[in-house]
Image 1 (tube, rainbow, N blue to C red):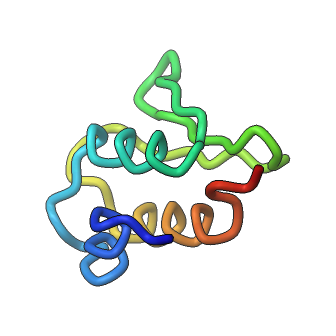
Image 2 (cartoon, rainbow, N blue to C red):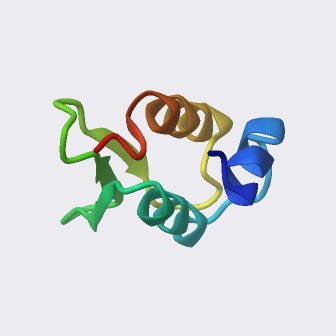
Length: 79
């Protein structure tokens, strides 16, 4: 089940995405989301070993949006 936000990120990873968009997408797909002590945020699915680190500063580069989409496709909503 892909959300509208996930589909838009898949189609346009170079869009003007904010860290709030990333947080919303993570929460929609069952990922834990937290801000780090520095300029990065972390997303992790409870059942996954990998932690995805995303720079929180704007603009968020397309490579990080593509990594997030792949991570959600691999781990999102695993229960």
